[in-house]
Image 1: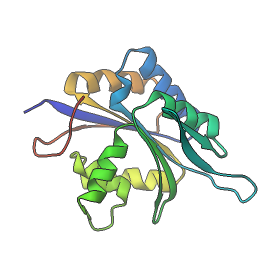
Image 2: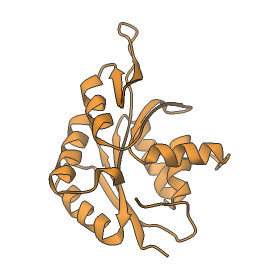
Image 3: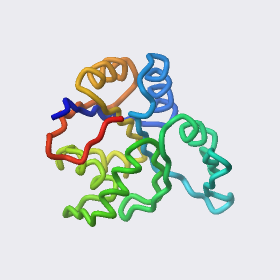
Length: 180
């Protein structure tokens, strides 16, 4: 069985999450193993949306430059409306975990689509409740996954950033977790 793990950092604002991703990138962390999740802020006085332009995802909204940069850097992107949380933007492999959980009709009492995606790779339900609560409070999640060694290195880097919560998780061998 593969030796897999994940580390999830919670950030109070988009600039702190952006700094964390840039630190991981500078260190050489594989960007295909990194996801970011955050709520979107829809205001009635501006257009909000996203679209594909060639092989690039484009985003319009309050933080268009912030999300547009991630969508160009990370593998996969999506815009979801999640009951109880609102509009959520996701970049990275967490998109496929969420879609896989939704397509597999994975429903877990009280967990959102984001939570079901995290649960499908082995994140414990009690931790997921913390992460969903953070999203509801307008915080951002940065999720790094890979081998235990890769995740330990990512955690060391994230420890130097301004996270409000930093937790690593060993991934159980019976999950749908796939490393690339």
